[in-house]
Length: 159
Image (cartoon, rainbow, N blue to C red; front, side):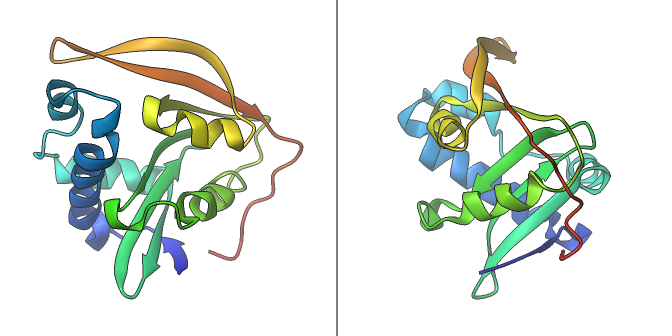
């Protein structure tokens, strides 16, 4: 597996990975109605591309297949972290997080973790700040504001 910076040509593949992962992996923790408002299948690729370019976004690749991606902004907000539904539990999310968490010199990293991802982040030392209900198209989804304080961060020059 290799990890590289995001390129605009990746956007469509990431949108598909996002949709498929949410609708398969997160199905154990969320209802079909919740999954449908979370990942609608009709992402605005222009907006996604712009956002992914503004953040520090990395892609994990194995055998020429995008198997995961994640992004973080300059404030230390880790927004997206998704691993292909067929490549779960292989250390991909860990490898992506290792890169993202070193991307910026920040005091803490925060995220809004799904029920499904909460345990992963807890294992990495993130603490729950609060449980919250997020409304999407009139449907409530539970997630967790989580944060982890950093000892020191260095910009990762290897990517």
